[in-house]
Length: 128
Image 1: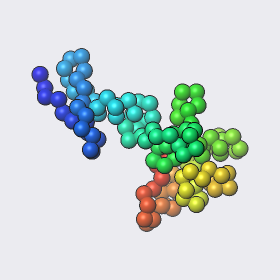
Image 2: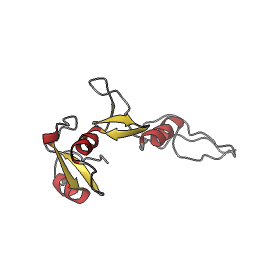
Image 3: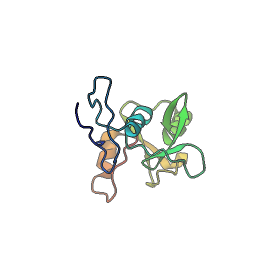
Image 4: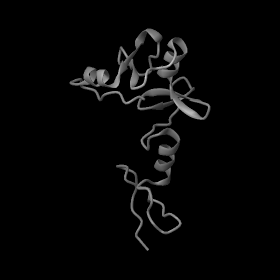
């Protein structure tokens, strides 16, 4: 039987589970594996948002709609202007991820967004 190893997430001290055949299977512990399954990322921050509704993920506010977590800025844009074009994201003009005022949101392609954030001191947005 193989020795159990730690989760691949840096700083996590949980052991990876064995599958029914005694193999390691995923390189994630149960907690991070569940976050990846439910929220799309093992790094998802599922704390409650400041006003008590929704959750935070990398600083972005999200809401559960029909069993799926959706980013607040995307919901606001879609309600006002309709579907967001494929390969486009919603950018916060003032850089405040929690300011989802319609006048603070702009649709742009991922390529445009990357160019905009190149050279800035902060990490680029990763919202989908």
